[in-house]
Image 1: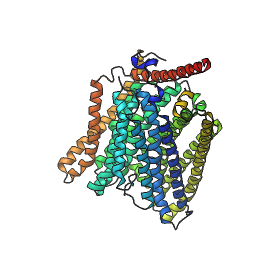
Image 2: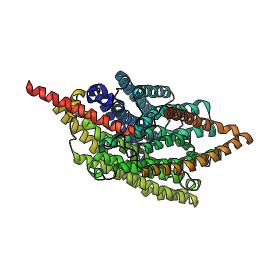
Image 3: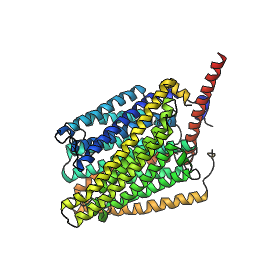
Image 4: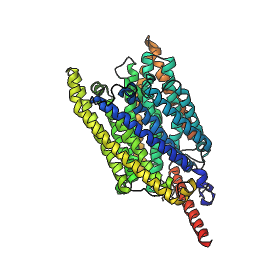
Length: 470
Length: 113
């Protein structure tokens, strides 16, 4: 055993993980999740002509749609990832983050960025770039925040001894990629490029935000949480590294596939198609690795709720990537472009995969953060099943509706035909959304009650929680 | 827990090699042919320079990773490629063990007092 692993030489838990900041990030994430759900709900109602406040400009569904997407990306996902990183990085490296004070400063600054973005969007001040709608003056602040995040987490990773575990490879890449992606998407089209060139960069930005920010953090955390919860190592670390390096080399060119049939040179479009199919092959190796890790312990899927969240998300991930590999072909794209297929695909990725993973991490971590068990396992079950069934119904509904829309358009039917035909699908989407919201209400109620238990037990303070959850 | 020194089975090695070949060869072929097309377009087409912007973005990202990959290989990061998964799990177990000991020690002190 190396000195690093001797129990008596390990750093004390209190000096490694600051549980309070993890809790703060998770609570902020849950708040933005609800804001995002409200935005999505307003947009879904608008499609049914049920807009509850059609005369209020600041509450127009067009603006709330942007809040829906920005709140889920920068409010929910970013905050939840930052919380999980504050738990995982110190435990993986046996070193605390560079500065706790910096962690709290970043937390406050990031909330200012997200709230200012929301206020800017409500007031109609938005950049004309999907997922880059953040008002122009916020961009430098957000970029500075991402730089500080990288410094705070890279410090312990760089100091770690020996060959790196795959999670840390993913994290290192994510910190560099996210900074570069954000800079590329928010500054290059705004100040230096226009027309098709700006469109090409915009395509890279929106896809890289998923593939180079959310994906490496998500998979990195899966490679950490799944083995420790199953108490067995990942099936093949070598295969996991193939997954990482495959993502590194194949993913960056993918984004152009958002702009097939545009003036962007065809060799770039074909390159994006091939890169996307290559990523699907890489993803297959990752999925094989995780299911091989679970092999022989399938019962865990039913008994262990966080594991269920994780593996359900993985199945959805495989499906979205398979869908991606098919929909980027030119023939398929001609049918589904601009249809609700794309909307279904996006929801399956962002909620069905990454949100499910993060909610699973919260399910695992909150008892460790609060020092008490969950108030109700039954509510945890409801949370999972309502979320999983809700997103499955919503995505299936939109994907199917999208195919029909594509055929209506291709057959040159009047526009109204496709609108009328889409109505039942949009109605189902609203009810699927209600199911998802109901699941999150179960979660928040359960969390509030668990907080109450922690207060009674006196385990809310960081040190007390450390002792109680050991 | 499995020992860190355990060698992977030959079947495992073959599966890894097969997967690597299935993934890498078509991808390399695809990228190679598109690279050739790109060079032709850049040198023959009047708007060829237009292609540089997204490709430059890609190269900036991938060259960085080529360098990182080279650094990792030369630094011995992949010498025993399976070792980190055992180390990670062992660290977690040691951390949990440390907390259990601390709690047991404090409980014992509390009883003595």
